[in-house]
Length: 91
Image (cartoon, rainbow, N blue to C red; front, side):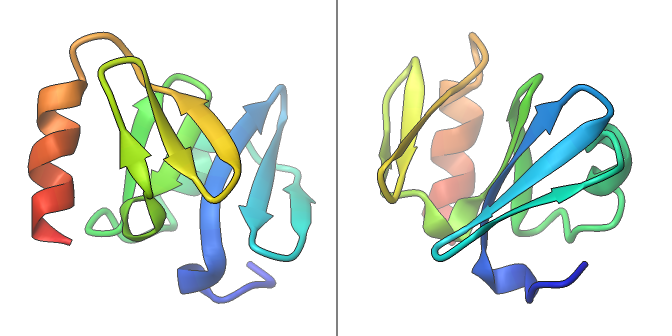
């Protein structure tokens, strides 16, 4: 990956590609999100939706339907709020 892991805000599935969002730039890698997940530390990254993987260290706020990272609004899967709440208490 061409960017330090801490700089990654979140990743978004886009068919056979994955978009990697940082504060300054968006990268596109030719790999599906599921495969990219295995290359990232599970202590920092969590899959909050079928199409999104987020760096929990960059979450600004969240509710039962979505979370905010910088100026991005990301949906979270139903029933995931409680687990996300526990994860963000640890960060």
